[in-house]
Length: 319
Image 1 (tube, helix red, strand yellow):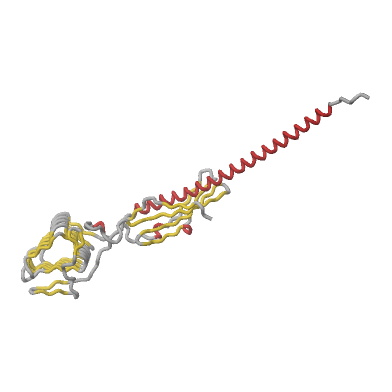
Image 2: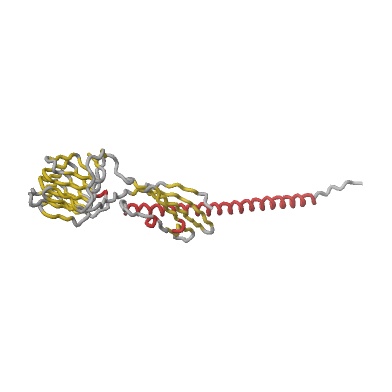
C-alpha cells in the first residue's frame, strides 16, 4: 500500500495561522496605540489645566504688584485692597483660569500681609488647582531706624511748605494744615514785655536749618519737632513738643527759657536719655511777664513702606 503524500491542506492551514497571528498582533498594536493616544490626551489636558492654574497665580501677582505700586505708603492699606478676583480665557475657548474672592484668604500679622490664593485652571474637561502664598511686607515697621531723621513724606500729613527761611512775627499764629515745613531757618521777631510770638503747629514742624528766638516767644508743636541743625533761644522763650524731638543741639542764653518734650529725644537721629521735662498739663503755661496757650497731643502716624517682591510659596497638590 502506497503512503499518502498530499500536503496541500497544510499550506492553507499555515496561511490561516499567519492571518490569525498578524490579526492578533495588529489588534494588540492598535490597542496600545489607542491607550497611548488616550494617555497623551489625558497628559495634555493635565498639563494644560495646570498651566492655566499657574496663569491665574501670575495674573493675581501682577494685580497685587500694581496695587502695592499705586499705594506704596497707604496708612490704612487693608485686606480688602489686596483681595481681588481675576480670570482669563484663551482665544479658542478651550482653556481658562479663575481666582474667586472666596478663594483668597488674607491676614495681617506683625504689620505684614499674608495672602493665600487658590487658582483653578481648566483645559477642555480637565481641572487643576494651585495654592499659592504671597506676602506684602512693611519695610519700615512702626519706628525709624537709628540715625534716621524723619521727613514729611514719612508721615500721614497735610503739609504747608515754606520754600525759604521763615520769620514768625509777634502775635498769634495758628497753623491750618496739619504740619509745616520750612526749607531754611526759622526766626522769631524780637518780642518785649508787652508780647511776643504765640505759635501753635497742629502736628509736626520740620525745619531744614536751625531755629532762633531771641526773647518772649511761645512755640507749641502738637506732634514732632524735627530740626536738622540747632535750637537757639534767648530770654523767656518756651517750646512745647508733645511728640518726639529731633535736633543736634539746644542752646539757651537765659535760665528763664524752657524746652518741654513729652515724647522721645533724638540727637542726630539717635535716641538719647530723656533730658527735658514733659509738657505741663493744662491749657495755659504762665511765666513771669506772660503766658503760653497750650493744646493737646496730636502725633503724626508714620507711613508704612509697602513692598511686594514677588515671593511666592506654591502647593501643587490641592484637593
